Length: 313
Ligand SMILES: NC(=O)c1ccc[n+]([C@@H]2O[C@H](COP(=O)([O-])OP(=O)(O)OC[C@H]3O[C@@H](n4cnc5c(N)ncnc54)[C@H](OP(=O)(O)O)[C@@H]3O)[C@@H](O)[C@H]2O)c1
Image (cartoon, rainbow, N blue to C red; front, side):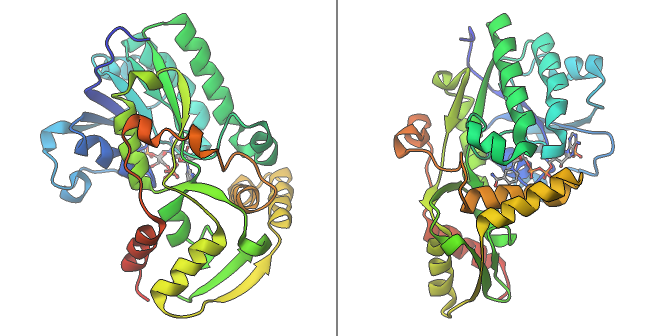
């Protein structure tokens, strides 16, 4: 365990992303000072919308190539924690960030997890595009054993609930009120909104009992049919549905991956695993650490209402 687990200053990688913007908000909301570290090619700018009313003095941005260890160490020195929310394609880059964090004396490292259970062997077999995440967890375990003042926490949140509904990833087309229902829509899975994940990150950094552990959080345990039911009730109409076999969908992903088409393969592998004979997307309620870290969760009906409120029907 780290000697001083009082974390107040955080470096955030991936703040420009789909999830990272919510983590930035969660950290600022919890009064952390945040250094956003971007790749030199990043287009990110601090705007009033980015900081959303939080004091500008609590956020600064730095652009550093991830292979420039001296600059990374210099920037991370004096900061308490590193949080990474970079995309699947950049997962391997975290090794350099871990090495730099240790050299800089950072106390806690939260890697880019935020999905299904990386420790589940079946998931790694079904969705091989996630294997690099396991390599990074193993690296963190080894490094924290060598460096007792350096700790880590992996956060598994299963599927992104709000994004899954609004982006079409879960099979719903909100504008057209249609849905593709995979394998009868009855597969049970955990899901978490990006806002809840952002708050969880802030809470985990204040929780010594999460040091050197992989933890599970979730807003809801649900099915595709249950989400469709909320969508239909709240839009007041029956949605037109078609069906697809989830396992066949995942196999299409395998074929694409064999052909080297990672970007098209990944969503099919992930969705086929989520809705079909998949693994790592549902944990027993007793394993969820929502209450243990003081995390408030959201109701599915409220999340659906919020997503519908953002879309023009
Ligand atoms: N549970 C779910 O349903 C779900 C869904 C999506 C993602 N996730 C997970 O959430 C985490 C964040 O994903 P995201 O969708 O938010 O990511 P994203 O929006 O695609 O990308 C986040 C940031 O990563 C940086 N980045 C992109 N490619 C990179 C590379 N090759 N090397 C280094 N940095 C790179 C970019 O930052 P700059 O260019 O500004 O530096 C980008 O803004 C990942 O672990 C992902 O697997 C989970």
